[in-house]
Amino acid sequence: MSRTKHPKKEIEDAVKHAENNGWRVSVGGSHAWGEIYCPYNNDECRCGEFCITSVWNTPKSPANHASGLIRVVNNCSTHKKIELKRKLTRPSSKSMDYTFTLKYLLSENDCNYDDLLERLGAAGCDDALVGVGQPGRIALEFTRDAKSAQAALLSALKDVKQAIPTSKLIETAPDFVGLTDVAEFVGLSRQNMRKLMLKHANNFPMPVHEGSASVWHLADVLNWLKARGNYKLEQKILDVALVAKQINIAKEALQLAPKIQLAVQALVV
Image 1 (cartoon, one colour):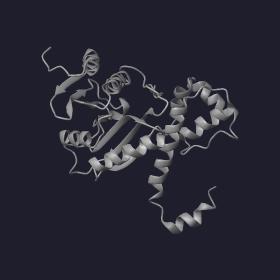
Image 2 (tube, one colour):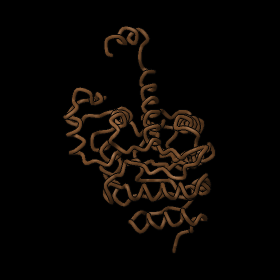
Image 3 (cartoon, helix red, strand yellow):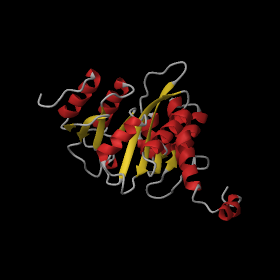
Image 4 (cartoon, one colour):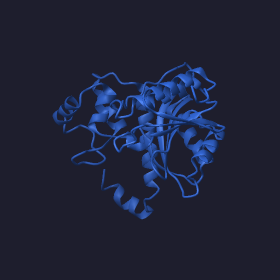
């Protein structure tokens, strides 16, 4: 092997898995041991967000980080259809692992990838996969151990804000989804999910955007399915989706003028 081995066996195995699937490995850094580069990096590949992914040197959980790296490789749409349903591992009686993604817009002064990785690692974000496949953007897929989904997401937001104060949150995921995404979460085909929506058109959750490709809040649809009692849903995914929805709504609400908010509030419900 021409490159330096990763000191953690499980992460080294994950890096080898990436190499076996054509990914290029670049070694170098302090908090970040290196990066892996997708061989395809096309427009269909997870929006390009994780086509360049960091490999931490000493992550909080080597096993979680290794699993995350393997997931990035396996979820490359050119390699395999993206599996949006996250399999969260290592539950305990006191805390759980919650998986979610934070997407940010970077300022012009925060586009040095190596510097960003060092700052994120120092701020405690070494339980996240860092993707910088899009210019001026950064995506962090966290697998964070916490007592609740809310605690996990809020602590991650705080850590990123500490590391990159000028960054602006674009979106928290999982939240905005199409029917195909929902179908994958609950183990149905898109056709069956669409039939279900049409059959219950009067009480199916309202979309955030309606059109040729309608978009819903994941939490709304999962809660609707849960109320029907016929579908097996992971509570952790629902918990994360509920908090992600609230964070996205709160972010958008900051743009509302107080007078408009008061005038419209009674008219749109």
